Image (cartoon, rainbow over all chains, first blue to last red; front, side, top):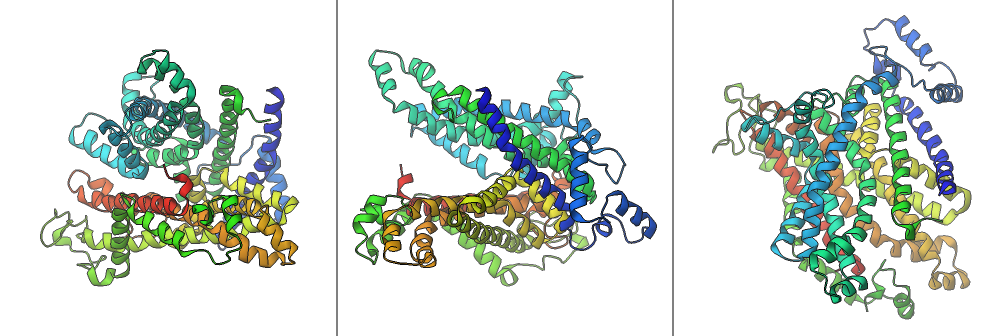
Amino acid sequence: MGRLVLRRLLATIPVLLLVSGGVFMLIHLTPGDPIDAMMAESVDATVKETLRRELGLDRPLYLQYVSWMGRVLQGDLGRSIRNREPVIENVGRRIRPSLQLAALAMTISLVIAVPVGVLSAARRNGPLDRAGTTFALFGICMPNFLLALLLIFLFGVTLRWLPISGYVDPLEEPWDGLRSLMLPAVTLGLALAAVVTRTLRASMLEALAEDYVRTARAKGLSESAVIRGHVLKNALIPVVTVLGLQLGTLIGGAVITEYVFALPGVGRLVVDAVFARDYPLVQGVVLLIAVGFILSNLAVDLLYGWIDPRIRPR
Amino acid sequence: MDGSTPGSGLAEGTLTRAPAARPAAAPRWRALRRAASARLAPFGVAVLLTALVAAIFAPVISPYDPLKQDLGHTLAPPSRAHLLGTDNVGRDVLARMIWGTRVSLVAGFVSVAIAMAAGGVLGLFAGYAGGRADGLVMRCMDAVLSFPPLVLALALGAVLGAGLTGVVIALGVVYTPTFARLMRGQVLSITAREYVHAARALGATGWRIAVTHVLPNALAPIVVQASLSVAFAILAEASLSFLGLGIQPPAASWGSMINAGRGYLQQAPWIAFGPGAALFLTVVGLNFVGDAVRDALDPRLLD
């Protein structure tokens, strides 16, 4: 297992290098001069020159990359050109709401998806199964910003049960914090629940067709004991994979959800940076998100081998 | 025998039929029939056709000028004059929705076409070249896949500039690796088959093999992937427009209309939910069509 982890880590290095190169090149993809894109035309020419020199844009490309990479490796992701704050601090301040949102969304999705998926498969083609698969289809096709607006319309505007924007830290004020995160987490969680339901239903059906299930039934176990003791455990393995695959969608969804509900998270930071044309900040945050994404995918991969020794990659 | 269906991957079936150079017409008809008989496909096709008609004939069927403001009738609820009501500056929501169809369809189809072309060429090249070139191309594809799709599209959109072109290119880049991987896999599996060995032994050039054997056989899974991707590309364009990238106001797109309606959920929910319904229905419909195409071209996936 230790060697496997090491090998997978080593295999990640070239991808990380390419990713960093891509993020570095972002700023050079702007049609025209990036400095002009970042600053209004009225800004004084000397101020523009200073920024150009500060970002190193006056030097040859490869030198720029080497010095940028050197700084990144030392943990210096540059500074926002708007508020002059280091990118790392910017992200550090905003990571907590994002993680809380993701954790709550994932919990909600499992709480919904596991029973729905299991019941769908157990009563295949029954009315419950129809309802379950329809729910899954709707969840997959529903844009999350639209779902967010529907939830706001229903629970925020019409019923007035939950706040529709703003953030309270649940670690400081548990009740108000949970309330402030509830609608965003449901928005994000429902889409995830749809995908998980679909996967779980399919893998349950597959597991139900196995010989050991027939044996378990033959020895007189009740159907629920068969499902709990034999089917569910095996059927949950693909769910882990899907949760891993959905990480990217989850992050993208978090960007939109944080935007709609005005949560001060990392996703909101990306959107704000993009619209402020604060390229150093965009670069830094996107790089951090990509690295986080790569590492969590790696973790899921390894977790997968740990859960199911049969498929441990050699 | 369905084995000769392109891309079915059933090498034995293909082999035994290989002498009959012209593929029999029957499987193709069967494929079409299967697609048509899929339960939900007709709904999907109807939605897609409606969207296409709305997009193409927008100037004819749109009841009003989508940009014309009428400050005397702002936030008017749906009525006979304005079937879906008006927005905060008195523009007709239905008219804007119809014009928005153009943006959505263009974004969905063009970005997938870009991804299909770029990914197809890259995958073909990687699969054929093998070795280091293959490694390099595929690691680059891995790198693109290392970004959460929406974040990558946002970042690219940011530097390419807001507007439909930027968004379409950004989405094209985001979807390219999927097609490259698919194409490469196809090339590797097809070039390993006996009929390609046979063609090579007969002296066919690499180019000829690529065009007459590999491409036609590799196309089916690519088409399936493309038909499923369009729905997600439309969703992605709407998400980017919602965030404010994409086509710029006052021009109408579903995503930006939904965003504009956000502030009027209480007084005028139709501003957001009209285009929202259109977007949702289109995505559902395209998904049905995509599923039907998959079932038709890839019998292995049938239950």
